[in-house]
Amino acid sequence: MGQDYIRTARKGQTSRLVLMRHAFRNAVLPVVTIIGLQIGAAAGRCRADRDDLQPAGVGRTVFDAIEARDYVVIQGFTLIIAIGFLFVNLLVDISYAYLDPRVKVG
Image 1 (cartoon, rainbow, N blue to C red):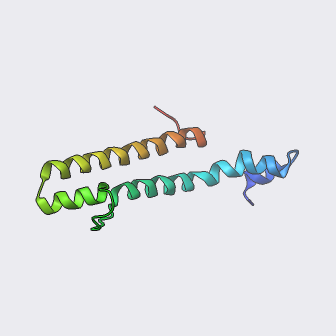
Image 2: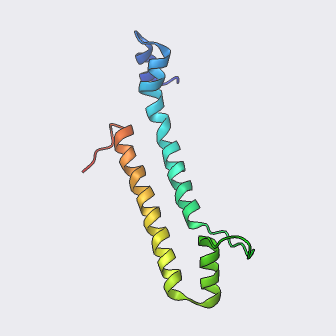
Image 3: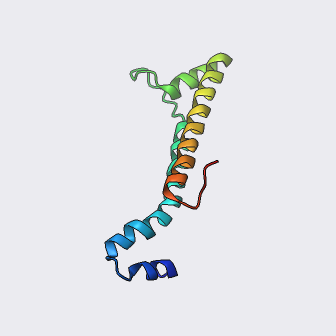
């Protein structure tokens, strides 16, 4: 908040407007990066529950496929998780161009 561009923007504008237009755009880039990484990491994590009363989820299905050495199922889930991770990273990169005018698309 003590940067030169913030102090210059304060002259003639309200504090709220300075926060939203100038400070928020610069502060949100690291937050978007961390959120994108966390979503991608969460997609890659599988929780293997061995309780037969619960319906089969992704983690249990992958765990059972690993135990049975079912390579087609393992490859399929790995591909789906990788595509999801790539999609989230693409959305993060596109949001950079929207949030930071210094980032050019092309």
